[in-house]
Length: 303
Image 1 (cartoon, rainbow, N blue to C red):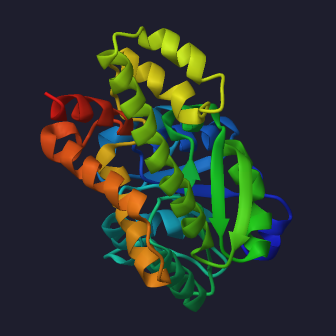
Image 2 (cartoon, one colour):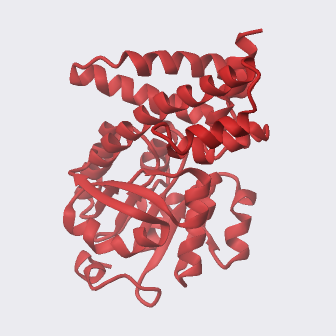
């Protein structure tokens, strides 16, 4: 499929989708494409984790390269930059199989430099690439209400916007390759500061003998109100630390933001402090818990 054809509006009748990565977010995001009737080719390192998508009609392929050979647009949602690099540049990787005119969209949060490298390598194959990291966690993924931050050529973004619209409701283009990742770093910097504030406030409420539910009822409706208070603080009060987004993945994101900040010549002391606290939480065994499990690490450190 050429870019001109995509611009005619992708539809289940003319577009085959490839999907790589079926973790907490990926399964829900890909499900929306299947629900819309798209023919989907799916790959994951562990086939069983793709079972919910296969049960809905997705077709299994043996590698990212095969997904790229068979699909018009391939979307990737994996864990770490090393995983992205393997998916795109490894043996039988996506860019080995991509066809001229094909489009690859990395929705993983990774480094802006890696996104620019993918874009350049795709162009050498006469293909197209976008970086499109997301925010909204497992709830946003399930409900199709993610915020999607996109970098890459505007015509490519405009062409496949209908696919983004199936997964998100706040979808903005930020500039050339890597810009979506930089916008996501801004998002993660805010979350880092907000999360430590929410967790410390609940630790304080408990120590002061307050009813934490009533405290949330007060502060969530005032100037402190935010997504974290509305969505994650109630999970903390139920001791539900299932990962919508894992601590170890968040540490990865903070590391990318701090590395980029050094390259840009700026200092982010607040982010450095929160990264240190999260590393302690991971070392204490909370790495695979949701980011809000920072609360338990703060409680433990006070004992």
